[in-house]
Amino acid sequence: MGLSFIPRRALAVGAVVVAGALSLSACGGGDTTTASPSAGASSSAPAAAGPQLVTPGKLTTCTSLPYPPFQYKEGDKVVGFDVEIVDLAAKKLGVTQEIVDIKFDSIKSGAALNAGKCDVAAAGMTITEERKANLDFSDPYFDEVIAFLSPKGKKVNTIEEVKAGNLRFGVQAATTSLDYAKSKGFDPKQFDDAGKQIAALQAGQVDVVLQDLPVINDWLKKPEIAEKFELGGVIETGAQYGVAAKKGSTELVKALNDAISAAKADGSYDTIYEKWFGKKPGA
Image (cartoon, rainbow, N blue to C red; front, top):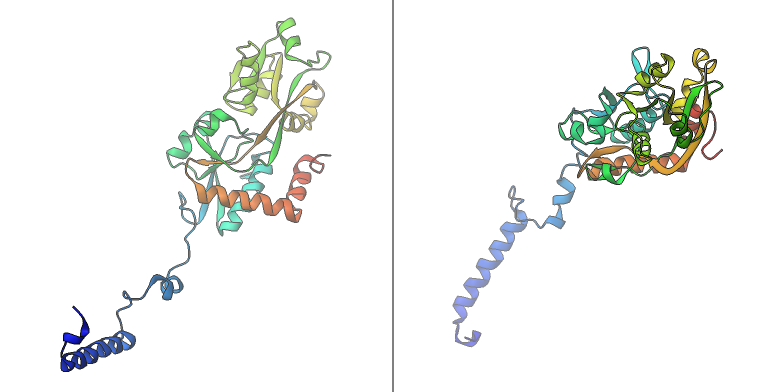
């Protein structure tokens, strides 16, 4: 129907009602639910809370001790390269880092993170396709290199020499060193952590070990190891380390990536690297 059939009085009354409603809407005191989201809801909304953490105010990190120079105990405190890398993210989140020592196998499988034992895992951990099925990883922060360590005068350069000499071979369980040995047809003796691995070599329980190069270099800083053992062949695998988080931890991974990227840009990554490895990256 057209407006020409509506009495003028009715139109006038309708106009007054609409005007009154608009006036009440503009001047009303408390009902903000009628405001559009863009008209003020965003300014009154609380700031983003950031990632949900296992313990509020703390970034809990799972690791496997000892694994020098990435993480190990110095007195009552856990220190190392990985510790300082994760500290960068903790500072960006406005929290402190707390470290939980746990077997590496439960870290790489994702079990520790899924059980809520920690928020992230940093354990000199190589990014692999198998592990990516169970974990989300940060951007890479370190290049993996593995190497042999054997008694002086019995230097081992290749895995073929291990086979030819029928040598007793030791690796850390659940690591890429184990993967490498198995890919070459070996079933080496496995140790729960790096500390037990080097102790077995010192005790003569194995003839040679395969481990990440920075760990071996750290062992060789100790006179009792350096006088009896020597570095053998070095293998650049082309793989890289990452900090891990539970699957779907988008905000945590972003915080880790932002921290690593910022540290590389402002030079603090180089400073941390040189502190723990005695040289700048790529040197």
